[in-house]
Length: 287
Picture 1 (cartoon, rainbow, N blue to C red):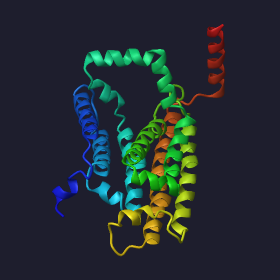
Picture 2 (cartoon, rainbow, N blue to C red):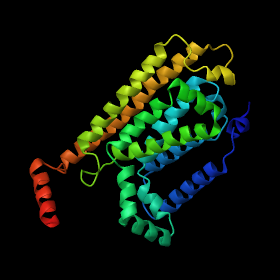
Picture 3 (cartoon, one colour):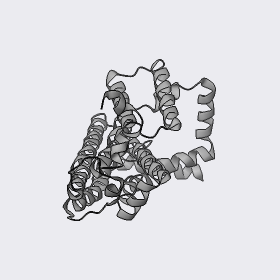
Picture 4 (tube, rainbow, N blue to C red):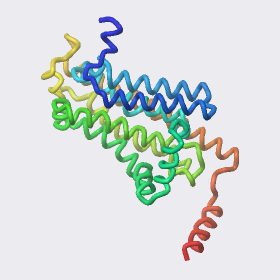
C-alpha cells in the first residue's frame, strides 16, 4: 500500500474537511496579526496533523477492526491532539483571523447572557473533567462499544465527543493565568490530571489483564491483522490506555506545575488575604 492509499479517507466527510480548512485559514490569517513563536506554530500544526490522520485517513479503517489501533486513535483524539493544539494557545490567533465584523459579533455574544452561560458550561471546573473521563470510559463498556462500532452515527458521535472534551479539558489545564481570571487555581491544574488519570489507568489495567474477549465486535468486523488473537489485541489496547494515556496526562501535569512555579516566582499567586478582600469588595458592590 503506497502513501496515497494511506492518506485516502476511509469515510469521506465534507464537514470534517471544512472544519480543518476553516481552522487552518483562521490560524494563518491570525499569525499575520499576532507574533506566534515557532514552538507554538509547531504544536498547532503537529496537533492538527495528528487529528486529521486519525480521523480522515485509512487509519480509521484499522481503528474499526483492531481494538489496540482504536485505542491509539482515541489517545490522539482525546489526549495528544487537543493537548498539542491547546499548548499553542490558538484562541487569540484564531480570533484575529476572523473578519472584523465577525470579531465584533463574537465579542458582543461573549458579553451577552447566552454567551456568558455557554462559556460557563464549557469551562466548568467540575463538569469538564467529569466529561473528559466519562466519555472515554463510558464508550469502553462492552455493550456501548458494540453499538458504537456498528452505527455510523454513534461512531462519529463517539469520536467527536472525545475530541471536544479533550479541547475543553486541556483548555483548563494549560491556562497560564492566575486564578482569577483562570477557572482552575494553579494547584487545581496540577491535581486535576491526577484525578482524571487514575480511573483511566484502572480501566486500562482491567482490560489488559482480562483473559476473555470483551469486545467481539472487532472479530465480527474482521480483524485487520491476521494471526493476532482477541486477547492479545485487547491487552495491547489496555496497555495503551494504562501507560501511554497516563504519560500524556503526566506531561500536562508537569506543564501545570511549571505554570505554578512561574506564577509563584512572579508573585502572582493570590493569598488568602487578597481573596478575602476580593470577596468583601464583591459583597459591597452587590449591596
